[in-house]
Length: 198
Image 1 (cartoon, rainbow, N blue to C red):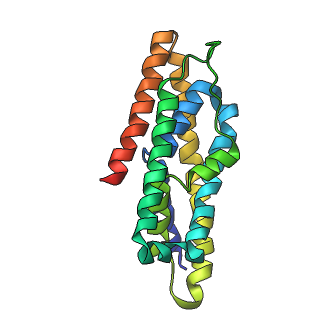
Image 2 (cartoon, helix red, strand yellow; image 1 turned 45 degrees about the vertical axis):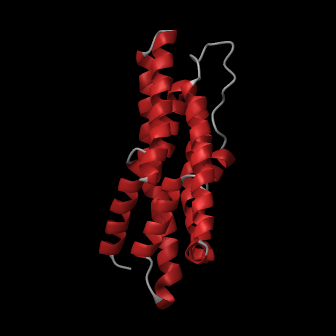
């Protein structure tokens, strides 16, 4: 594993972790609705969840998809339904001070577990392993390299989405504004399902 290998992997991780998708839209919504501090467990769950998912894939889960294509489709359907439910939850959330509001940020375990239902996270994990794992005796060292680089790249870019959401909350000063923001973030999260299928 050369410096060039690490640099290319880091760029790949930065790009895939930083582009809009279910995780980043949900982190933005959480940053806006609950603030930076209360969103940190969700953020850590996302950042830790990707290498955990990569490890599960490397231990042999990915070949099961090739053997049983229905398993992959079932996971995509389940993940999409859960993502649509989360999008609805975001869309109908009221303003932070609304006494009828019962929403709360995702916990660390919920953020981590969501990676196993997030179609983009699966695509990222499969792509990283297929593109950057090395053959033979270098397979596991390269895999540990992949699982180390993703959190280093993912933490700052995902944190930027949390800060972006928090900044949005400073500009909104009406219930109508909050309904528009949450409705827009919910709609964009739901749109991710369509984009990930096509």
